[in-house]
Length: 115
Image 1 (cartoon, rainbow, N blue to C red):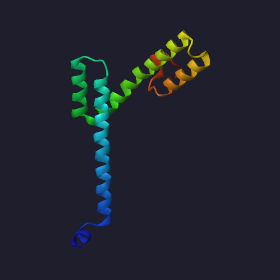
Image 2: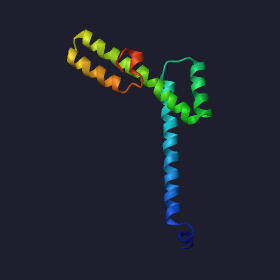
Image 3: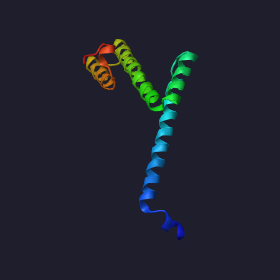
Image 4: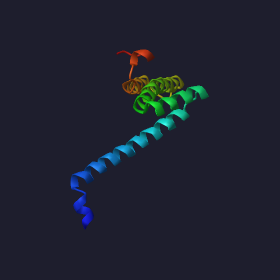
């Protein structure tokens, strides 16, 4: 029982918080790399993204998430337009899908939405 006297409860709590933050950080890196290599990009572009995530980790991950979301919103709207053109959805459903896609976009004016 000497171990419990040498390691106070607040130190255990602090160690647990640090450990969980470390696990979350590793998970964020894994998700960023999965998203990065899932895109269709040249080898140089992928290498630049990996270098930015390694050299400036927080900035690289945030930049990756933000730039990816613009393309994701545009592709969602394009897919909804194809469904509308094929008659699989109504105009009201298309507007709902478009609104939902634009709600996740960081800069709606770049893809034709309203700010």
